[in-house]
Structure formats: C-alpha cells, structure tokens
Length: 306
Ligand SMILES: Nc1nc2c(ncn2[C@@H]2O[C@H](COP(=O)(O)OP(=O)(O)OP(=O)(O)O)[C@@H](O)[C@H]2O)c(=O)[nH]1
Ligand SMILES: [Mg+2]
Image (cartoon, rainbow, N blue to C red; front, top):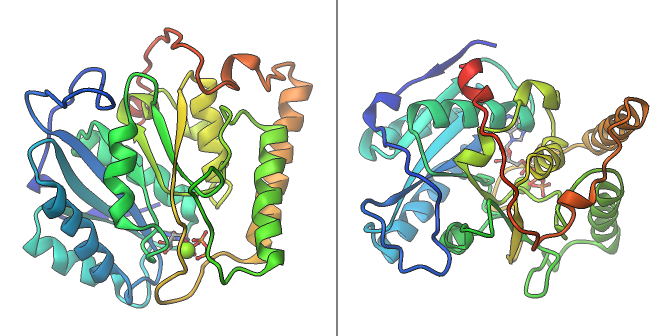
C-alpha cells in the first residue's frame, strides 16, 4: 500500500544498548527515546487533545531522562485527522505523521508504524496507544519506566489488581472482554499476561526487531494478541502495570462485532496451524512471567524488510 511520511526528517536518535530503566537511577548518558505509535481513523475530534495531553506529560516529568515522540499513523481518514496531525507537527517537532492510502486495519497500521518508527526515529522503546482518550496519557511514564532487565514488553493492564474497565460497560461487554482474554490464553503464548487484548503497551525496540511481521499476517484487531504471542515466542519478558481503561472521549468506535469474530477465527487458525505443523507450544518456556532471560540471537527482520 502507498504511504507517505511527511515530517520524519525532523528528528532522529541513536539506539542504545540494553535498557535498565526499572530500579535504576536512570543514569543514561542521554535520554531514553520513546516513540508512541498512534493509529488513527476518523479521530479528528480527539487527535489534537490527545497530543496535547501526551506532551503535557513530558512537561510534568521533565525531559532529562525520557524523551517522547509520536508517530500518528493515519489511514486517509475522511474527517481530516491527518491534516490536524500535520498542523500539530509543524509546531511540535516531536510529532510525525505516516499517511496511508486507505483504511487497512489496526494491525496493518501498527506494523507500518513500528517499521517506520524503528528505521527513521530509532527509538529505544515503542508504545501502542489509542487516540480516543481510552488510554490515559498520565500512565505513559508508568509503563515506560517499568521496562527493564525483567521487562521487555509492558502491558497497561485492566485485569490485574488496580486495573479497571469503564463502569459504564454492560455486564455483556465485560464478559466478552474477559472471554476474549481467556480464549487467547488457551490458544496462544501470552507470557502469563492477564490482559492480552488491550492496546496500551511499551515494548523495547530490540524486542520488536526480532519479530517477522510478514508472518503475523494479521491486519485487524487480532494483531494485539498475535504480537504478544510472537514476542513471547521470541523470548520477551512480559510485565503488567494496572491501568484504568476509560470511555472513548469523542467520536465512534471502529470495532465491529465482525472484527471480534474474525479475530477469534484468526487465533484458532494459528493454533490449528501449529498443531498440524508440530510446533505446538503453548510452551512452558514462555508462559511464566518471572522466568530468567534466555539468550536470543538477535535478528534484523525489520531491517531486512525496510
Ligand atoms: N490507522 C488506523 N487506525 C485505526 C484503524 N482502526 C482503528 N484505528 C484506531 O485504533 C485505535 C483503537 O480503535 P477503537 O475503534 O477505539 O477500538 P477499541 O478502543 O478497541 O474499541 P472501543 O473500546 O469500542 O473504542 C483508535 O485510535 C482508532 O482510530 C485502522 O484501520 N487504521
Ligand atoms: Mg477505543
């Protein structure tokens, strides 16, 4: 698909070695760079506000240790979301825009965004976050600072003590969300995570570099669970920090019932494929959150694809 990046030459960082943010005094020679990949489709009502709130956090926490940037990945939203992001980027050099030709699903947007961010902005950590206000920007630094020697992939979790879903959710909606998590845990490698389906995450760039995105073959919402599965299978250590998942602030959800069914079928398909081809782990190697780090050969599949 045709896509254009419009302001990326504004900034570039250099990659540093293993991150040890957690339990250290953050004694890096330079700030840890964090790129928040923000997929948008018809989020004109939210985009400016969410960008303001993200960079407020930079002000609150200071800029000496952690430096935030944002890559908005827009799929040609008819409501002009990209124009607003572009405008914002003119005033704030840490905001970048990847414009894609047409709506192609959340997973496809994240894959394009990760690849683009890694190869042009060189962040140490990438984040997934929704643009609709359901993920509270004031949690960003909590997720990022949890990254460390025992955490390559940190999930903002609704389903550990201290986490929550909106009070306005019906019992039916709560049940579907819980069931989707349970189903995923049964069929895929989830590293012991309690919230596998959420989309507020901080992930080391070095972890994403091990993933062959072409193999994920998931364009839609199931991307969240297949990405977790792929990272766990590549040795990532998973940790969770509690978050309150909020109501969408403005605009409409893009998630249709059909997407949930497609996601469930996709997960079943992966599992069946693994059973048939003899790599049937649900492996113990990757289902315990506190296991020690295995040594993994670093691959550069993203680089090869770029
Ligand atoms: N670029 C791009 N972004 C998308 C696409 N689908 C959804 N998004 C964005 O992905 C984020 C999550 O989508 P939502 O529709 O809020 O899905 P959700 O939060 O799982 O569902 P709700 O709780 O119902 O809001 C939002 O920022 C959307 O604008 C897509 O096809 N392309
Ligand atoms: Mg949402």
